[in-house]
Length: 583
Ligand SMILES: Cc1ncc(C[n+]2csc(CCOP(=O)(O)OP(=O)(O)O)c2C)c(N)n1
Ligand SMILES: [Mg+2]
Image (cartoon, rainbow, N blue to C red; front, side, top):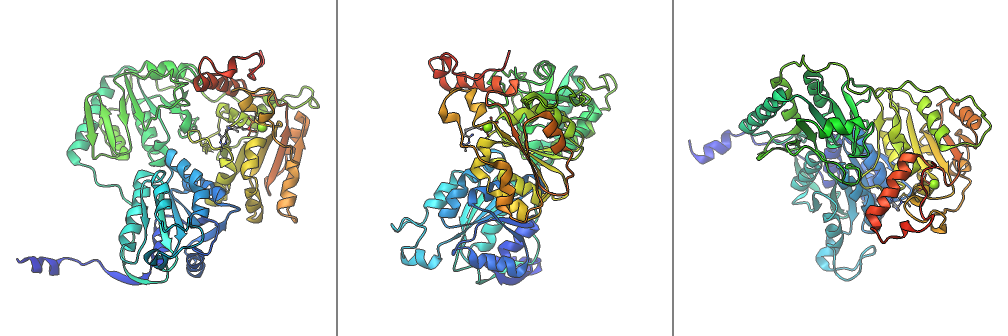
């Protein structure tokens, strides 16, 4: 057989003729994206026209691109992938903080930037939304710092680059940045007829076998094996595989703070939250650090996952990552997390010797609501107790940085999802993210926990929720400023004050015909009344609390954070410089 015979005999992939823009929309749709967030501009309006004409995606316009980037991130966390559409530079750079957050937190977001026409690049024409200095690669360069892959589309590269970027985002669980020059979206190109296959690269069969055998051997010989889970378990859809392995081998499973609620807290082998000396309950630390066969899944040691670097994981811990595994001196490549977990589960015997009971029961019965003096001033302690009782199975909780991190101490009913941005920690994230999670999962009850300071960064996006008839519950703590920062330093400083808004009036401002129920609560009785409102519309609860009141766990964490940040000569050592927990 000649080479030409071989070519003729091969099944040449079938092609279709379509436009660059429509092909991009089709691929996004095939990747499971059903909505796109963002702000229109002259360089993307032609693409948005295609979006509307084809109905491929539903457009969710946001008040600004930063909020849009947070929304696309929240959407991707519940949906598997998200999309953001912005305009050249002015839009893209407003979104870059959110996109960087998606990178840090391993969230696949496709950022499509409608950019200056290829014609202007080829002819060196100065254009608005540029530096007018003959450069046009700066913004690709900026996004190279915060995305896994970037491309400027041309008619010649559109097919390969669109597929490369979407597949990279999917496989790496990272954002990508794609410039769509405004003069090519309507040009015809030849594209594959087949859908994009979102698949992992196949594993090396020998590596997979050896790796699984080595882990199974260690597990079978161990007396106190355990698992420590970080957020990649969720991003790579491996939670069910972990649960299966844990149930078969009777392995206690702890989560990092970046992965709270990734393992259902009602799972019998759920152990708690591991963070070195900050572990909850404290026994979690003993089990994880004392394990003679610890499996970590995507664990990333940072200040917030190690209890300010007090964590001491067993030296012989086995580290599972998305695409590799470390076992002592052996490093296994060309394997995938889900396949490794499945193979190990197949290889380990059903455990009978280790206790089939959970080591630590996480599910304390909800405490009865305090029926003391309901008219007394609302405290953080009473507030979080009431919220504990309010939770229902299947809720989505979105906790903002600040005293709202008390949510990490809540006992979550089965099926709850937690959407925190612990590692990147950009305040205001949650308000934009909530728009995304509501869009991805409109039928779930969604609860936002946010402070006044954080809310002021991205508050406008509540208007988008109101106009889309979303029905979240927004729990806003009005404590006159940045209470959690007062625990770092500047307890009494005006830098930690924020301007007081009439927060509960905002739904009316944002949508004059709103049906939202707004409450300003100052006592337990007020809060109880607000919490009894039906979830048939948006509920906005502004809770007024003292600026020096905060959950002990949050305040202690921030007191310690100051020592790490500022060192022994920092200002936190001055008299009364730090808000400390009440003794
Ligand atoms: C974008 C961004 N700017 C600044 C910070 C620093 N920061 C962290 S927490 C915080 C204050 C949060 O205050 P608030 O939302 O009112 O919460 P509280 O602790 O008062 O409940 C600030 C300013 C940040 N994390 N992200
Ligand atoms: Mg505050």
